[in-house]
Image (cartoon, rainbow, N blue to C red; front, side, top):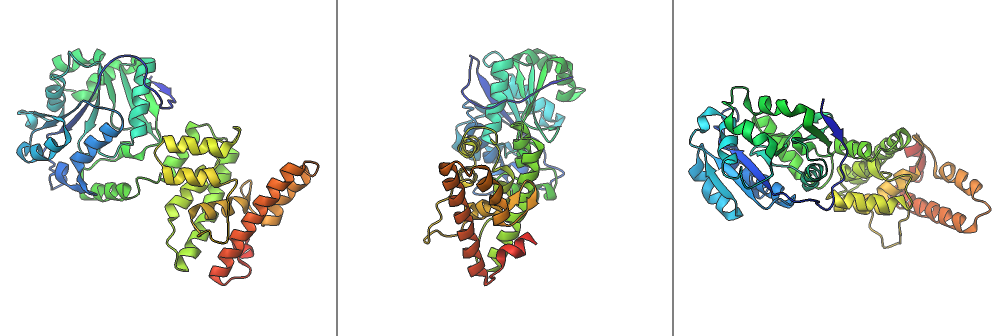
Length: 385
């Protein structure tokens, strides 16, 4: 049984070079087109895979090419990577792993193995895997999302001999299974580890994920909450806030605004990510920033206190702020019902009462602005009911 760990990425500790090995030598037969050179945003799939490793802190990146290698070379030469040609690529992916590993087996302590058709790995995931290796020195560290292993595994030097001498009948998976007792699984909030391209439908899904990669998916948000051990109350509250925020966003967009429903839902789900910590909104902001979601981190930072002036342009942060104040626990309530318990509980604490009243006034101002835009005087009652 593999060890399962929670790793928070930070400063790397300990010596040891880690190589990023991208394998892109196959025929792409199921796809019907050459996967590495398919467009993904302003880059190709193979360029995006290289960029993912580099943004994760990996400087030595090597790409194994085979089928149509001559077409890959000019694209890869722009990215300062070592290009390794596997003349035996027809024998399958394992032959490419062996070909690549031979170039650094005596020079690197470990390597991240990334198939070229699995390009969208978040930099925080790479850092988590490296941290797991630095701290625990496993034979293999696997990224796991929603209970399923994905790419790229980080494979230590202890596996090199077996990989280089095995005939490969069981494939790389069969070899790594021998090291199962000394492997770790690293829980990551990264749906990209499970997204590769085998079919045109897979490619469409990858393109959609790429288009919104700066906003975590709902499943990624839930993985974040699990990783930081949010309790069931926080989870249920976040889901209710996300739903209210989604409804408000839909009404505003129908009225002509162009707000991101995905960003509002993500903000609703994880706004209390650091609940239970002092100044949890600021701590949550820092955690989300480290994960690489700057737009979301601003929403987390302002969900408790938002300076809503007459000049403020309604945005996703304002929607999440109001949605949060329309939910008590996991129940949708009026603003007066939401704030009444706090006003009663802290009646003898003038400073606290002042803060609570300011938040209530801000929520009412946002509510009134939205009602005015929609031409609905009873906007709050419509949401609550």
